[in-house]
Image (cartoon, rainbow, N blue to C red):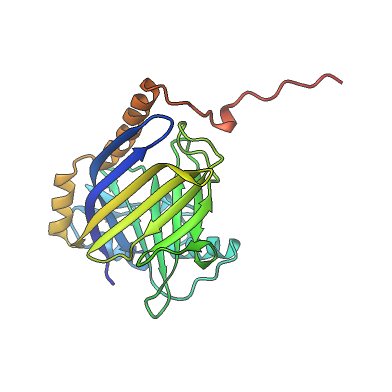
Length: 256
């Protein structure tokens, strides 16, 4: 398996308490995290830890950017009782576009030396500057036919239109010529929202990179703009708002 670009569409659907749906075109990088400097230096339009038309910066992902990304992934796995075998790790993520990036979620695909997918790490970020890692392993795997399916409890506030008492139901197909990631948000075991990435593989080279950058201008700015635009539409529809617990007023003192 090699590094690549993946292009396609992202679709969001809300079922309750207000119906709402949208989709837009996206592309993401699928990168061998042990070869990041080499991969980003392979084109005049890309750079590693430096400004360019597109770039990868270590500080855009969790942990201490002075450590290698592999070291951070392995350490986080150990903190969660997971011991990764010595295989490749690929990262599916947005790159910086003209110095800016916001990644609502990035996925680390962790393989063993024989090329078997053993774990997936979902690195979720919110617009409050917070991040949480969800480890998807055999411990929380469900039956899913030809794909991989996992269930996790929501641990971090993400959207003001979703409460905290929810579960995530993740479904992945193996990365190949096509790649699908589907996530259901479950309330009392029933989906009230889902998001689907349906992507198609392109080679990792300068021609395909320039093609993606010109086909998706200002994509990372578009991600954050789309988040706020769709939030406005949901608010205009009267969708209930859940305040981030850190922004809630403290309880008043209780009289003794």
